[in-house]
Image 1 (cartoon, rainbow, N blue to C red):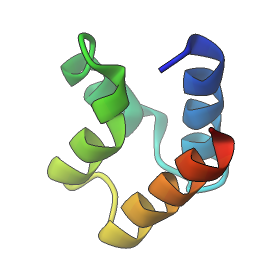
Image 2: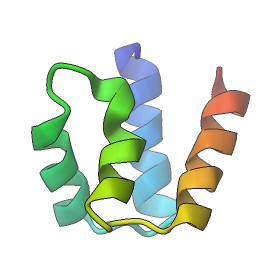
Image 3: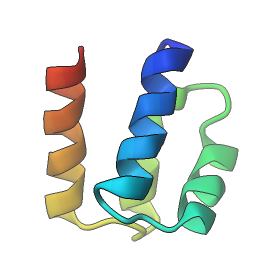
Image 4: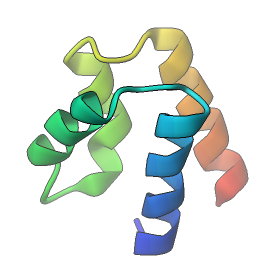
Length: 64
């Protein structure tokens, strides 16, 4: 994932979905090698709901 889009994704998570920065930071530590897995890691750790996961995927589809 390109860094500009990745930054926009982080901002979307923080501002639109109100995901706590600590939750995003935790997930980022687990996806250093593959940043595109960030939404799945957030969900796997119970940091977002399935509804939020779907919102992220919808956002990623439009942002592409």
